[in-house]
Length: 549
Image (cartoon, rainbow, N blue to C red; front, side, top):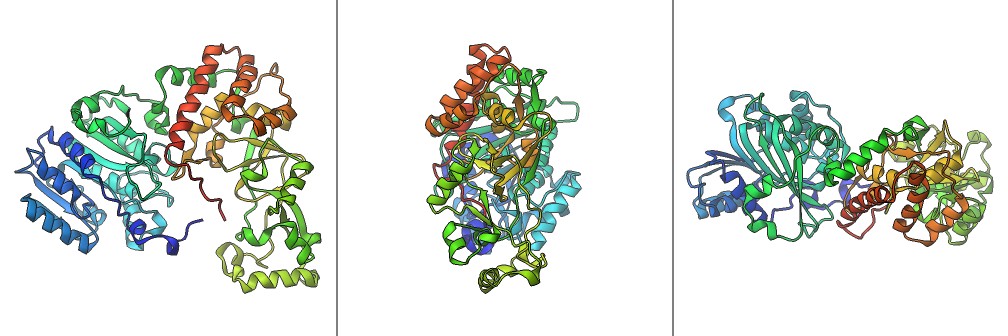
């Protein structure tokens, strides 16, 4: 879990500036419509102003720019003066200004360029949080407090753009897949004639794990103009910088329908793979996860290091009466079976394999438990939000185990875990209950190329490239369940521990997708679809995400 006090000043203000060559490419693209009025909603020290000045055709354009940081705004003004560009720099919040002016047709812009701040909603001052929510409300879009500052910035910028105008911005790569950007994706899909994402293999910002892309959007000239949809232009290195921007914008085949209505990850797949995926989803023996099982979050302790402990802590504080087996990390579950043997192996490594559940009446607690609880209070754990709202604070609610568990995050592809010993799981994992299939069948059938590809399409990833799924995304996963597919769960468990994920999925594809009647070529196409999305996700960094506290 991230806390505001642990973040750098640069990250809190979202101050990652655009490389000059990317800014120049963007300037060349918007110049093609000969804009007279240009908006830069978060200009920083003026990187985009320099790019505009270097491109012939902006000499007479009026540029309106905003920068909340007064020191950076002064730098931008000085740069504009030095390079002789006609720019009006406002040292104020763009969102507040946009709310006041966006309905006035005279204030509309021909083009919007820039690099909006990457700042989590909870890190924004209250006034900016209110303005962010107001932008969503005025555009009649669903709002979530999980959003990031770049989302309302783009929404407000697009609302300030005239019909037929162009928006070009460097934005987080997560625009393609995160749930909190769904309102933005839907809005852009409705408002724009054509959308293009320039998608690089490498990180453009060296000091952050945050992947970035270039969003090129051309607003519809009128309501009658057809919306073509979204195209993704994959690039390696910076060669595209020298290309004609129009050729780049027109190159990818735009796709609409499901792709623009939902997550844009589908656009990363070839048309044959997308078509095959959709066809498989219609088969009688392929189910949505929600139709065969239910998902619930794991136990929320509010202080995992206190409640999840190794055997040594149980022994030292004599807590055996309250200790129960648990798992919650990928290192605890290298296969698809969590049994007594795996639990002993985790214990031998000194892993926190015990969940402490103080479910006695407060007055009945033994002195040994009271000593350990007092230790937690000395560390002020009882003042944490999730602890202090409980009475008493150390009594954890909703404690139960299920026959199947699933870790929230995965490196290659998610797995279900057959929980044969009734171990508990924390909120780093999910508790799964089947409704129409036996647990062993679901666990074994879950590992296959189709479900792995489905997880890539439905999930999300951040800096670090680890795949994460929330319950609403898990519910959408495609699960093939053929009566003729025979899976040896013990053998599958051993294979996952021994071989690469690609090799295991290939073998499972022959068994499970083959049972659906899929040819080897189509099995391979689905597998390659998964691999391409997995590899793209991994390119952001080799560093894993930290486990949640």
